[in-house]
Image (tube, rainbow, N blue to C red; front, side, top):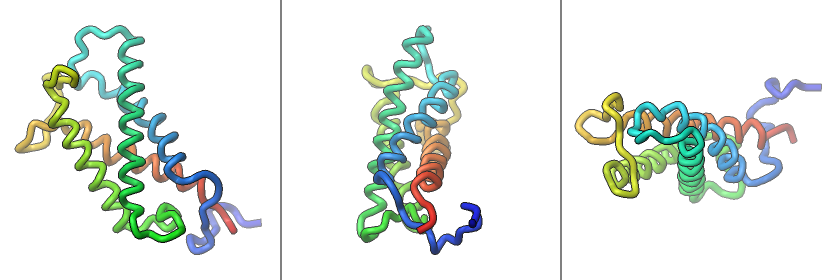
Length: 158
């Protein structure tokens, strides 16, 4: 009996629920942890722990929505097999690009808006912009981890 790690990439196929479901589930969970850890980089206005958790939970659902939208956008023209099975670099770059573009737009619109959020003094900015570096880093780390976990769960031997 072969160990999962010994199975060649060519023998993988998708099993179970659509990759977008697993990306959303892992995305929400990982993003929630990230959102809680990045709180010092935002002005919290003395939020209670419960209110901070509620807001981070809502943000995590938004993050997962962006991940699913980026995955589906990167899937256009990929055929019947989910691209996550083979994980071609071109689709992964498109996935990251879509997510980064959406994240940058959300940050530009939300920072300082009445309905949005504000950065604290310790938030590093992307050079030449008013966009926080932490949300940009989040959009590389969290979605990559979510894709990886979704792939590990969703692929297996034929």
